[in-house]
Image (cartoon, rainbow over all chains, first blue to last red):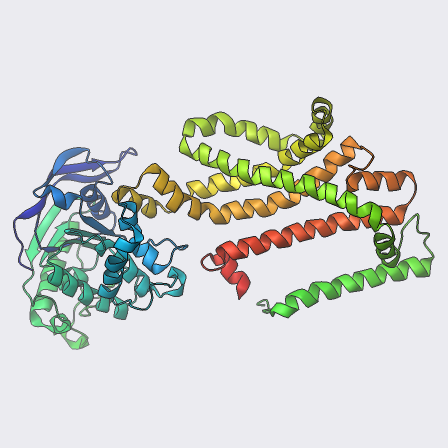
Length: 278
Length: 265
């Protein structure tokens, strides 16, 4: 997960909505090529706005977004918090969508679609409708759709937030493996300390609205991530530190449960609880 | 207390049983009370009249169904096209939508005589009357569907550089399909009502007369069983239209839309 030269750089980027809400305020950030960057922050701090700005779905009110490699700007994949699938289309047609919109014929796109579906472990489900799949499988379809264009940069907006813990762990591991195998640059938005540390080679903590970079911490660990990392001392230590950074950013104490569930509603750490990853 | 689930056959048997019971009570009251047929004919007499007067009633049924079908088709096509047009430009929608509402809320019986006066060819006048009643549900439902598309999917299409046509063809129209079909289900019944009301107002006789004229004619001649038989045929036609449109909806949405999936279970 070693980061290369920046693929995209945000320079003093601000975003003010017509309602007057300032989502981001003079935010600067470099994202290295091949990096899996976790963006962590409280709800409403502008994380999703930041992803949409990078994707070009929104225009910054001030500042600029610089792409080192112009090709990367047009080879983006986006995964939303919800699977955001077309319910009337089968899995294969959902995955095919970006290629079809780009004018690729069905015959040309078929191998790419099959490959993307296989990458997310959904072989045999190409002809299923989204309603026939579980929440985790739908999210896999969403990821396959983002991968089918062979993107250079993958933008993920809390994609696993609505999933159960077992499914989330599995998808996190799969994503880490996929990112490593393909050398993808991934910007992963989350509000879970555990998820940000497990996935990210770097965790950037945003302050509450208006969002700006409050802190940044590198995470040392195996590449790609393995399940054993969740129970390592290094992981626990990184979680504690990132949690402290988040607490400082939000200017109120945040306590951290010794459970890598990534869920909210945390409780004070206690060595005697025996639920920790260490 | 939770409502109990009903099997597929139960869904048919229950209303049929209720219907048979009601008809039995009706027939019993007529017989016991000795009510003359020109006041209230029993259901058996009405059924016999449907058969004996079939040669008169059936051509009229076809006339009414032809007006209904034509008005329904024009409503479906124009409602869809206007809805697409409205959603392509806010200016067009703001300019024209109030007039669509005005047409909808103006009582048909008030303007039908004018339309029949202006349009000399009666079948066309009837079609316009029926269309006026039937097209608004298609228009308003489809506009709602076209503008209710998942915002994230809209963003996704933008991200992948979809053209306006691609967004319409592959996203907005399929997303609006359940709304469009819902509008059709309402429109089908309204087209029949519009056709019958217009026929009442037109009141034309001869070979091109619909069932409404047969009702009027039977009323004048105190042939009340025939009047009931004509009303029965109109109701049966309405039920048939509803069932056909329900089937169309199930065919189009059955694999993916929640409304039809629930209906299947």
